[in-house]
Image 1 (cartoon, rainbow, N blue to C red):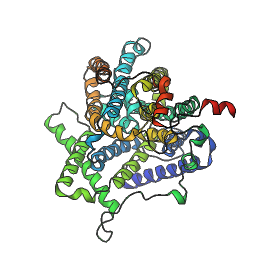
Image 2 (cartoon, helix red, strand yellow; image 1 turned 90 degrees about the vertical axis):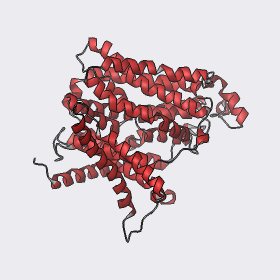
Image 3 (cartoon, rainbow, N blue to C red; image 1 turned 120 degrees about the vertical axis):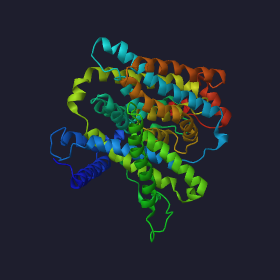
Length: 469
């Protein structure tokens, strides 16, 4: 099929139909509601099953993987434009605890998984040195990072990287949703939750179906430009596209200046986004930028990225790597469970279970999954999980960008072991810092009742009440 504007139109039309079908399926199929699978994930599976990499009934083009690479540039370009300066007072013990937990999890996923892949799995299977890198790419990063990393490995002649990364991200989301629901139910029954006493009261109808009833519907953004001149969404999309096109041409420019170095478009787009934000704040234009509108457009790109990314997975590649992938995912899930169950009650002094579940969600899927799990057990957001993570995300963002941008280059040029060892050693640093600054505490599962009595809030369902019932 010769690619043309009409092929592009047809592809996105079919992707849109798949997203609609995915949402309708979520609304009517109890099994999807039970595990709260996102519509984009269901749409991706349908695209994979009935698209060109499956039965071939849906005439999608061969450009699906390219769409993911383009859309992730838009997502990264939008991140700085929608951000605001974080209140300095938010820094404190809770931020330190969250920083230690998140930073350890990120570095451990990269470092330990790569060491395991190189020195253990490599004894059984012949694997690319970057195979273990796929765990953090999919679990900690998600589909957006998977698309970015897949594009970053292309100059180093590893064509399988995109399919493996997308598979990792897909398995991560499933582990996030299904495993997360099992964990929150377990925690509620054990009395670990502070705000919800019964698992049956944790999920409302709109969370199950994904459809918000009229009485609870809210505006998705503010109008900051007059429609007579320019539609507000057009204005915000133009800002995102400005960062995205800067990312594209910046990469081309870097390639001409330093041909031996490949700088991914999404990294340059992120930098361009910060420049745009700085210019807007200096000129007073920031007051005409609605963060909600930018975030909605970014989420829109992410939805299409997920369905296109999953539909582009080459099943023969997944089948070829089925054995080592299974081993890698088991190790990854064991790591995040260790963090949630053992590290969480020692790292977080207040609302340890709520914060652990929030972190479990984005450690295996995306930030959206973390928010979803948090809403179930902390509907009023009293744990301040999102506020502290916002600060940590700002602090850790340079490190995460470096891991995504430099990882493929170092692995592709023969420094995979060095990269893995560096990440593994650096993973110890946040734990040492946590101990030195008093961010490490006794197991909160044993002192939780005393904490609850001190703040005057119930922790789970009282044992006596449970026995009486």
